[in-house]
Amino acid sequence: MSGYKNFAVAGAGTIGLPIVEELLKAKAAGTVAKVVVLTRSATGKDALAEKGAEPIVVDYDSPTSLQSALKGIDIVISTLNVFGLDAQSQLADAAKAAGVKLFVPSEFGGDTVNFPEGFNAPKAAQRERLTAIGIPWALFPTGPFADWIWFVPYIGFDLVNGKFEVAGTGNSPVTFTSRKDIARYVVHVLTSLPPSKLENHVFKVEGQRISVKGVAEEYEKRTGKKIEITSVPLEVVKDQAAKNPGDFKSWFALYLELHGTVGKKEEVNVDWPELNPESVVDAILSYKS
Image (cartoon, rainbow, N blue to C red; front, side):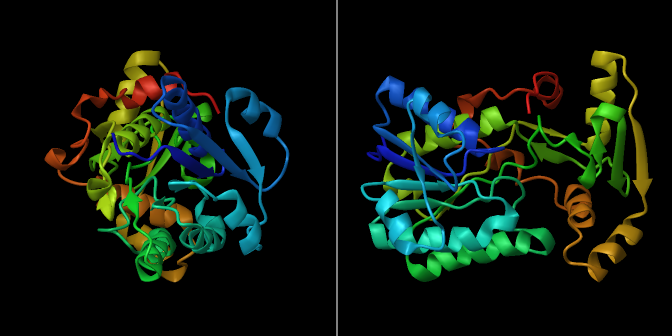
């Protein structure tokens, strides 16, 4: 047991809600005492409260508001997206002032330690900032969300219409992990390991290591539905990314082709080898937005 019982989750969206739900399971089992959810508006508060969470509306521009909400909290888990990282800076400052023991920055997804460029750069800078202000952190690189990522046309995956776009071959191995398995791993680690093994540690999580084309092939076999894959030459995508650092689609495509795994196979799921994650196609077939 880690000894940490009181948690605050910033945001209850794409990855935040599954983590909150897993924390509430731990609360029901007695391993977690408090689950606070920081939210910008009162919308959805009742639903969260009915599940056993303590939703608190906060103003990220108000240190007093944030510090008050974090009073007595041991671990803050940020699930703010890449466009909300300025708020994460304010959250980290408030966590430090409130005496929070551990901060989990919103780095769910790609490996920002070994690939801190492009769309990962703001998140890598956030981690460095945590070190600078002196609050211990724990990272959970997981690869793209195995259930969700295939339904996001603006980054090149439109499973509804059976179309994928990739940079290069699409045959490079990629780490994919479903949101359910990410939540399970995060909560297991944070509630079972001692502080000495949590602080400033990178926990590499992997559901399945498979290429984008491999996913398409398995999906076609399981469903009988065809997927059309468009391959954009790697040099073209590199040029697009270089010209526009804000071109998320190009940077993400490069990440998948060139830096797609979160580590060596022997480095993943080390702290919970019993995770027994679901496959990418199983995650797709059980997907709920």
